[in-house]
Image 1 (cartoon, helix red, strand yellow):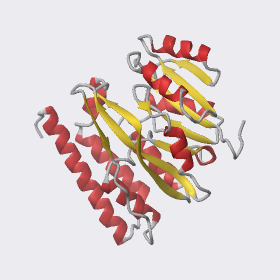
Image 2 (tube, helix red, strand yellow):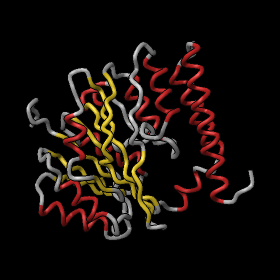
Image 3 (cartoon, helix red, strand yellow):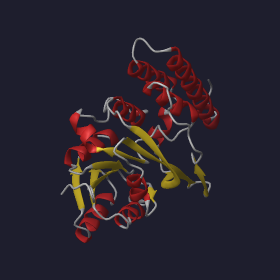
Image 4 (cartoon, one colour):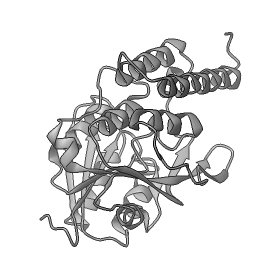
Amino acid sequence: MKNDKSPLISVIVPIYNTAKYLPRCLDSIIFQTYKNLEIILIDDGSSDNSGKIADEYAKKDKRIKIKHQKNAGQSNARNAGIKLSTGNFISFIDGDDEITPDFIINLLKAFSPKTSLSVCSIHYKNLIKNTAKNVYTNPLPPRNNQSKKAYILKLLALDGRMYSSVNKLYHADIINKYNLNFDETINFAEDTKFVLDYLKYSSGNITFVLKPSYIYNSGTENSTMKSVSTNWNNWQNSYNNLKTWLGPHPTNDEKFWLHLVHLRWCISYGKQIIKKNLPI
């Protein structure tokens, strides 16, 4: 049921072979301080016990909806979750990550009638090195008189909090009105493409919650996920998508920030190559 005083939040969780981490993920959602949640679990053909774990949680909490499907990829799973959602707002949580108890309420409080998207900082945990740190906690500059697209490019150039589909709260009406979904034909930067498509049709402001409320667990990725970041063609295709999103006649300010985003991506690609000790 939708209402303005206590809006329903649809939390969409794509699940694929994350049995080791899934209980912590689901516990962190169930025990949110904000209770009016619709928790949508999409089991994307898991071959471990993830599906059974999801079923057990659904028996304990009536807010949980489950769909078991053949493996079709994370983007397909997220799209399936969007189709099942009925909330006023939508948030995406990966099945191997966690959120702090105040994640939803922090993002919801950041909304005003003029807000289209709220974004929180991230607590980054490296499970291999057993280290943790807060990232993207610095204040970001206001838009002021910049064009919307120049400002978004500026945010992409300055730090990494805008790139992922997680750590955010979206208006469901915008997603539904424009039939927005994740591009299932790509497996690199599909999150960023979704966020950019959403912002393209959003007229409101972006608000930032500086408290790190999304817990990103690094070290759970499979070999396929790791390899896509060391393929230059993936970075170039993403850059081409960004130029298409920007349009054929960018302003000088938009061109400036586009070049800085490209520079950031070149540096990020180089770091991935060095990290993997691969030839350039």
